Image (cartoon, rainbow, N blue to C red):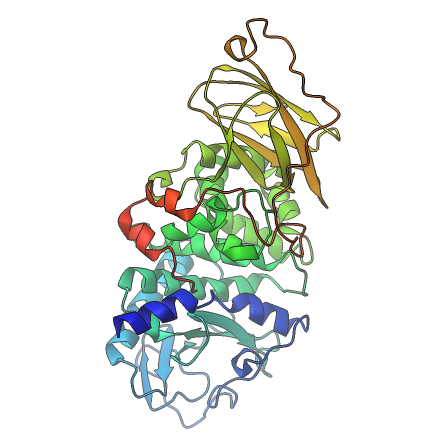
Length: 443
């Protein structure tokens, strides 16, 4: 049984909500009938003969015979193997998420949630671990949200609590943002839902292990969906609220996004913070690389390109970052094929030339919107240059390509990468519990 569960965990894809977004926008066909067609009971509207429950919120539709309710949610299922205790736990997690995000942090109530209980279906036959979609009706032509959860993963209570609130967070997002099939859109839904789960319960660390999906491929384009990169990007939201906006930053970004339909997230984030995206990502990259986040001890360390030496270089995608380890004090200059194609950031400064100290991690963040920024690092350090501290022999107009191996993804990122340190190295730097969860591919 343990082997079967482990096999299912390794094979499970992540949250299916991006599939739902694409299908709802008509941008992608789907073979999962859950996404576009409501299950029996959900599509018949309000039953006049159904009494309101004691808490006053009625059900929208008719649940299956097996179901449980709370103040704001209905959890129902058809599979006889579903443990009713899982439903009870799920309701607790959902209500805790509602209290934290809606009542305390003032996220707008999900569509239909002001009047009706929200539907949550436990379905062990579904692909992945979770899915949040929406169905239009006469009462809610914009669509009302429904959550699907795979109870196969409920045994790990820490993971399950994060998953449940993650999916509930998507119902809040549907209230604020339409999706028109733009390829750059879904990453921030997932990066936000991961951080919303953390904000709903800071003591529950079911999100920590997914930081590795950023840390293993930090040079990928910011909105990449390759190798689960989007889930790891919750660390950007951690930095945003810890270092830039305060605890209401993510909500304010989404409130602005409601009025910026069709606008890419890098532009929305720039407007919501009053800073250029280049400055936001450079500061974020430096903070992550140098362990300057509240939960950095629980995050996987960022994969590094190597040690800063005179003449080393590479190439990096838009708002992706190459990290370099600093072995000696000195000044590092960024040499570029194109002006302003990339930027350096370190412990306490950002620019084209930085003073660094041994032990620092230096970040090179790409700024070419539709391509890669090629660069060379020039290190001025007396010990490394034979005592004269003069310019290196590297040609400023001829940086090596340094591109990662593999095919480009749809955003110009890489489908495969040989640049990052293997996950095995990251295990040495994160708690064993976090490491154990590394391969659970599922939201």
